Image 1 (cartoon, one colour):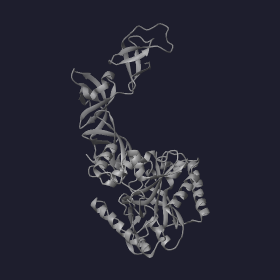
Image 2: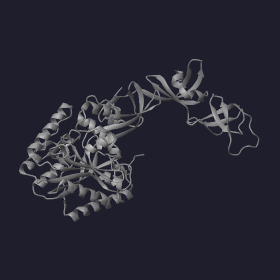
Image 3: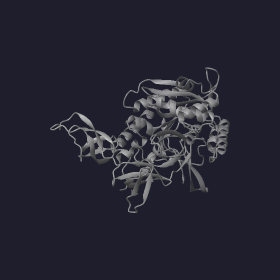
Image 4: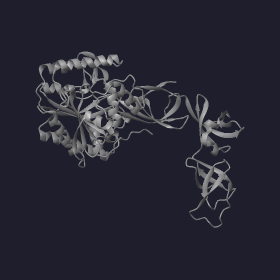
Length: 323
Length: 188
């Protein structure tokens, strides 16, 4: 028999529709307007840990390679530079190789940008939206510094611990070879296997002040504690699940250009395919994008929690295996 | 054998790890917000039966293991090896060492079909059927009229296994036993 039935129950999909209407109402009340940007673009994400899907298509300029967007970030930033003001989008996004209970090849990213709002303001706003969608009071919202989490859980400072002992600890916790691993790979492993599962229990945890090397498209600032550079980013966790990733957005075109080039150099070094850099995003940043913050929230995961399901597939009409 | 990458790891896939053939039980994809993705994998070592939990960087691969599970009937034991025969009509026989037989030794009965695991054409494991019918060869005399609940005694079965049985069971009776738990189920 062919498995044609949806991965979500019809009743769940109706709940999904109701919660999405709630999201739109939330932004309408804030005066943040909804935009739609392309799923296919000439630039892809250079991020070392994101695999963009590419396809060939005939466009007005002939046969071209286009990239399925891993998030609507680049197009939305071009709108910001063009003077859109605060905007949000429910964007279908694509990431190759992401398969599991918490992942699906294509998923819905709820992304919004708030020119003029600082990171703290956006954290507040994100927590309000999450609370509005969850059926019960999740408990307090707590700020957790990345460094503090490592100190509390593993009794080490992730910024100053020697690489050799990070590798030893990561190998021990993960049961794998880490002798050649980079500092960030060790920290990522410890974060995902040891720290994350305990986050967001009896509350909402917002992790802040990531290592500067993990800034991605966020600005960096000095840690008040000792002046170490940290990334102006946050991630929101509930029930061990990462829900959202927010940035104090990088607006400097040259800095962005340098980070793209660094990413592609790292890709070459690891034998990963290079990704076409989004020149139009750089053009928009050079022209001037208003300072502000932005956040990307995995809507399917939030719906999974809100509807008490065990996987994102259970809140999607057709998860990739039967799409 | 082919190599399998972490995104091909599915329950039941047989791979080589640390020199032993293993069966994948579970594969969980874990990825921090913006960072290296890992796969948390549970595997059963087919040589020892032990369950291992290992982490792999996503995209890493393992060599496939040439493992086959076949149905075979138990034939006899010559004092050194135990002999099983394919039930597919080929009459092909396989000798099995005591080490590979393990605990299954106490559940052996002629003409019963067992699941035999072959690795590179050698038998590494023999799994008995979930339920098997065996005769009681030794137990204390049954208590007349005591068919009610409560009370049990040890009984030795024709295969050598010792199970707890109700007091009313007598020598010579054939019992249905659950080989997974080693518990008496009913009279056969």
